[in-house]
Image (tube, rainbow over all chains, first blue to last red; front, side, top):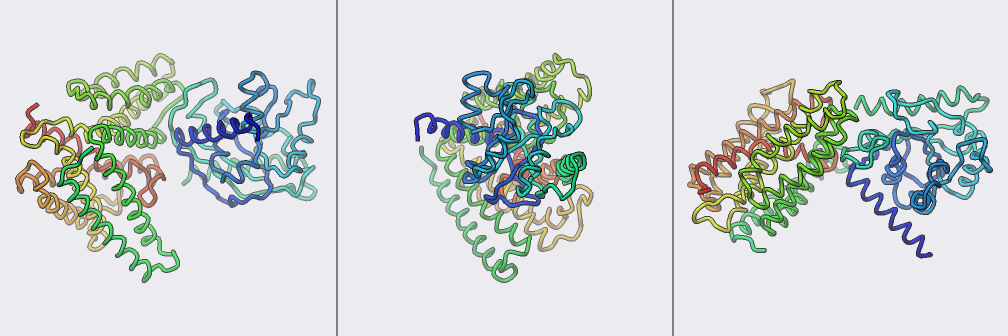
Length: 214
Length: 315
């Protein structure tokens, strides 16, 4: 291990500890178990802390093999962000802008899966700051499911983080957050893009509703 | 770091009760729920285990005197308010007001208790925070649900910080002939109020038939209330030797503490019903959240404090 990677590991632990202190985050495994099988966790996206919370509730052995997918156009814009994005979180950095990109994002994600990693993906594509609880999905999740149909896609609803740290705020407010994992789904034989995206979108929203009803 | 001899005695007594409780629970578990299936027994075991941890934590904090008590209850206030404000109305416009509540008002309140500034800590939240936080929220210009938002935030501060801080504030009293023993007042309050909670639970489970407030809290019965309050008050009277009180005074103060504690549980249940949740949180296994465990303490502590201050204390 290099000094840099030790520092990155320590930073990751500090960030996770801090997230736990602020949010007392609780995982609810409501359809899958926290086992080390290869998965794509797809979640709602309201705050930069989202994948930290998912990370924090995963058992450490699984956490090390789970990589967030994040926009390089955001995470490579400063030294600190680059260190956090690439070294601490070991993110799969994709360029969200089709004009400028050199690599195909879906191929990058598939390659990470082939290396044995699980992924955390935010199919809304960007942070949701409006009143709509869940924006329509971009097509990345579908294309990934097409290329790697044998990987479980697990919906993950993150509750409350948008109130802990709304977009643009620096200081987090301590409030309790819940991370709810739902039943895994896969692309069905013959399922077309629109139907698949609608089904996965509905599966994620259903998790929110089951939390609201409880 | 020194504890009065009475504190060691009391702690020994509490440990004996816990050992007995764990013993009885393990027998019940073998008989009724050998394969972990009976929810009541499982909950009982989880509750008793959590009691061990809570007693140990409280005892350690008490050994460090006022610093220990201020830090412990400061942290409990933080955890309680985190649960409370999770359920209250708020909007993005309240971000700075809420941050101020957590990171300014809470530490300042406990600092004022630490430096024993009674004149300020008794009005800091009811006056200064009460006026300041709505100003901060108003500056952001969001009017929807404004009154609900600022009221619920203030309620959270009053319950989770102001009221709870009266437990360590007991250490600032000056009672002639009782110097160096003030932590026994905290021990007395906690034993009576939590004892009352436990005894109400036990009497309710054994004899409970007539519900007091079926809509609010189906587990609260007249049998549990009367049996719990009376037995906890007798327990309090029997602890007179560690207090500055005569036996009858210890009894009456215990009645006051236990009754206020009961109503604290009732009021906090009403809020839970209103917000549609069963427990305030999940961090204390078997009990729910911090507010679930503290609801009776926060209602009794300020009254206990002021009665003592008026009748016993010289400042």
